[in-house]
Image: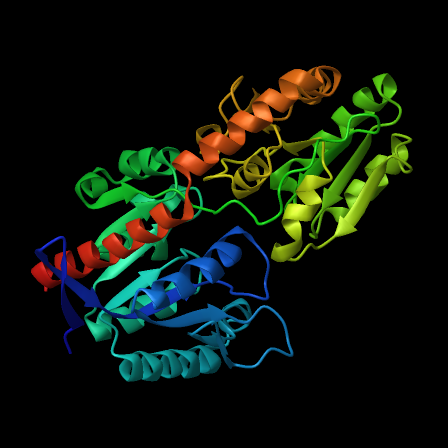
Amino acid sequence: MNARTLYHSEAGLGITRHFMRVLYWTDWYLPSIGGVEVFSARLLPALVRHGHQITVVAGHHRTGLPDVTARDGVDVHRFWFHLALAANDVDRISELLAAVAALTRRVAPDLIHLNTLGPSVLFHLESSRRSGAPVLLTMHSPVPDDAARTDTLCGRALRSASWVNCNSHAVRRDLCRLLPELADRSSVTYYGMDPPALAPAPRPRAAPRILGFGRLVTDKGFDVAVRAFATVVRRLPSARLVLAGEGAARPELERLASALGLAESVEFVGAVAPEDVPALLDRASLVVVPSRWDEPFGLVALEAALMARPVVATRVGGLVEVVENGTTGVVVDPDDPDALAGAMLVLLEDPATADRLGRAARARAEARFGWDRCVAEYAGLYERSRNIGGQNA
C-alpha cells in the first residue's frame, strides 16, 4: 500500500508531502531512561504532529510494563527479545518472530526506521524482508567493529538499509571507513533540543557544584571524575561533585569516593526524570562529561549548554562536535584525572571565563542544535528513504 499523499501550496508553489505509516524499532523506550530513549520520546510525537503514523517496536526492560501502550499519539509494542535471545530459547524466539511478523502485516509500514544494531535486529531483519518496506537506519552508537562483515547482524542490517543516518560526523567517518559503499547513501543529523522553560540562574560560586550526569557505567568514565575531584577539593574544600544517574558501576564509584576520603563531598542522587534535568543543571557550576568510549554525540553536553553551563569533556567521538574547546567548554584527553582536574579548576577559579563559555555554549546550541531543525531533517529523511526504497524495489 502506498503512503498517503497530501497536496498543498506554500508561497504559491505546489508541494507534495507523504504522510507515512512508520514502524520505529528501538532497543528500549520510555520509561527506560537513556539518550536514545529520551530523544525518541520527543521526536516521535513531533513526527505524529507532522501527520505520520508511528508504531514503536521495543524490547521489554522490566517486568510490570504492559506489552502494548499508547503515549503521546504513539503506539508502543514491547517484546521480550533480549530475554529469549539470552536464554537461546528457540521456541520463544520463533513465537516472537511470528508476533513481530503479524504486527508488521497489521501496520503495513511505508517505512521502517531502525534505531538499534543490538541482538534484537534479528527480528527486524526477518520482518523487514517480508514487508518489503524501505529502511532508514539511524546510528545512535559507535560503529561496531564487525560492521564490515557480511555474516553478522550488524553488517546485514547496514547493507539492507535504504539510507543510513548518523548523529555525528565522527560516527559517519567510521561508518564510511568500514563500509565505503554507504558514502552515497548516508548523512548526518544532529540531535536537537529547545531551550527549557527554566531560565538559567547564576552559577553557584561560593560552594561550587560539579555535575556528572548519565548512566553510571565504566564507559562513561565517572571513576576518572571522582579521582580528579580529589585534586579539586584539596584546592576548593567547599566544592561538591554530584553524580546523577543509575548503573552497574554505582557501588564501585561509592567505594572509590569513600576510599579517597570523599564520602562527604560526593553526592549520588540516583535517576533523574527528563523533566527534572534543567533544574538539576541549574544547580551546577559546571558539567563534566569524562567518557572513555567514543561518544557518538553527547546529549548531556547539549543539555548543559542550553542551561548556559560550561562543560569539561573528553576528546572522544562526536563529543568534540558538541563542545568547542576554549569556546563553549574545555576538552581534555580521556582517562587523565590530572588533566580533568586542571580543566575543572581553571573554570572554578575563573568564574568570568566560565560564565563567558556558558553563554557561548547556549548561543551555539540554539543556533546549531535547534529542535525544529532536527524534526524537519528527520521528516526529510523519511521522504528521502521512502523514495530511495521505491527506486530500489
